[in-house]
Structure formats: C-alpha cells, structure tokens
Image: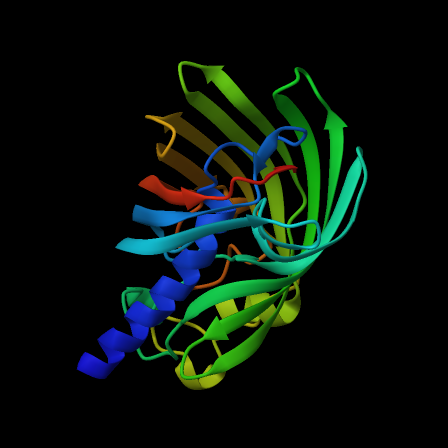
Length: 283
C-alpha cells in the first residue's frame, strides 16, 4: 500500500506539473507583450472534479510543486505546452510538445471496481494556434487545434490513443486592478483506442450490473472553461478556474462507465515567482 501511494503521488506530481503550464500561467496568454525569458518559483494547487468526463466520482488533489516558465524562440515551457515552437507569424503559430490531458484516477472510481486501474495521463503532439482577432492591445481571440497522442503513467508508460481538441479561446491580460481573464469553448474527440480506454468494458470484466461494451470513435465531450487570475504583487498571483464537460452529448454516453451527463471541475491556486530573467522577450 505504501508503494502504491508513493507511485500515485509521483504520477500526480508529473500530471499536475504539466497542468501548471496548461492552466496556471502567471498571466493570460496574450502575445506582443515583453516578458522575462524565464520565471521560476513555487505553485500550490487544490483541484476537485470528475475522474473523467461522465464519471460519477469526483477526485480531489492538493499539491505544492516547482513552477517554471521558459519563453525561448524554439524550446518553450509556456502557452499551454512544454516543447518546441516550430513556426510563428503574427497570425499563426505551430508547436509540438507535452500538455495536460483528460484527467483520470484509479480505485476511486466505484463503477470500475474489478477493472484495470486508470493512471494519470499526459498528451504529446502538434498544435496549431490561429489568432483570429485582437479586440484590444491586451486581448486576443484564438482558435487552437491540438492533435495529441495520449500516454498513461501506470506501472510504466503506455500509449492509449489519439485525441483532437479544437477550441476557441479569449484571453484578456488586464481587466484592471491586477485581474486577468481567460475563457475557452471546445470539443474533445477521441479515436476508438482512447475512447475504449475510458469507456470500454471488455467481456472478462462484465458483471450483472456492468455489461460488456465496445466504445466508438468520436466526440467525448464539449468543454467550457473559465479562469480568473489576480496579481497580488509582482511576485504572487492567485487564480481560480472552472471547467465543465457536457459529456452527455458524447458518442459513448451509453457506456456503463458513463453515468453523468455533465460534470464540473474546480481549482484554486497560487503562484509565487521566486526568480526571473532580466532579459525580456517579445513572446
């Protein structure tokens, strides 16, 4: 039991470290503003939400982790991914790297009792970002098109399929008095392999209350997310986010592992920047 808890803690730290870059930027992701080449510090998180879209069980996590941003011209840990920026213009950007993934958990999901454990998931792959409009100098409307391979960390690293998550985002750097805002609306699609990982029930795990089920490729869930941040001073920023999945619209909502048509995850956090580069870059 001690080993299992230690392994889950390491997996949680790995998953939430990438979550840092995806959801806990030091400020909304608006381009054309000079920022330090790198920033480093600590980030504390409290998260609670469904184990996966359609799950009936909520999972809570609280961690304090190292926090790091690097805004290099090619290699980057910023803007929602950790990897390489391959091309950039005023209108479009193309990168490839790691990002946060659909969140899963383990034995906490009652409906999966007796089935293989779910691990923590990370995504890797290309992403295109298209800047559609700039309503003001400190805001942007963007279309993001990430195609990701999904990897599970659970007694090793295992490939679990592909996801595609087109989404529209609106980032506003300054609402006044240190407040910033980011919102997004998107759709999450999975191939048959990934959807089977989340919602499939192989025949050997079927029971009287859980029938065998083979998942279909297609829509997992529409998703809406809101993030509000507040800069307390030059080094400390707090943030809160809400993410709602409308998974009752997904192609596998009839799976015996899919019990809820809608689920909301909530998070609170604080970022303490303990050091930053004196070199500024136009990000």
